[in-house]
Length: 231
Image (cartoon, rainbow, N blue to C red; front, side, top):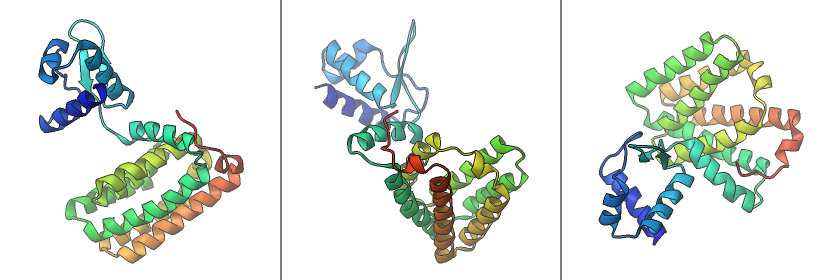
């Protein structure tokens, strides 16, 4: 019963166009809407809270509030299943090596003028970045932009989640120290995407991701053989 009610709540959130920060009805109204007892409703809300779809605001005027559905929460949920299946980090990296070059190909094939300008600004942000923190933010934004330009929401969500899982555990300092080389690589990939050259965009992204994977494997070999843990 609680799982059924949870699915109905999700459908209603989408159908009513509720966004981040919107509050759902009071408990009494939800019990009436879904024709369910208080215990089953609260269990349904707990299911959605655990999956990061809502959060419970305490106190007067509180209640279930719609959360942002993002790759971080999706990645956290995914790690539960990855650990249960014994998936290692080298398998996670291999999956990224397949998906991100494909996303670059799709971005080049499906780009539009607005996407071009966004990508140009992101690349320029990387060129102008000073310090490791600013540079890493620009680098992450570049990959996120390419994924979003793929035009495929599932590829975008899945690839971002895998990136979140991996980069949360791998040190990024040594990558930041190589930012001159990575800047040029990002610029070349962006040029290929903007030009609509899908083959070149895919090849450059694959080479970029393979180089990154080799660097991590060399610097943190123990990580690659570890099982992805649930966090």
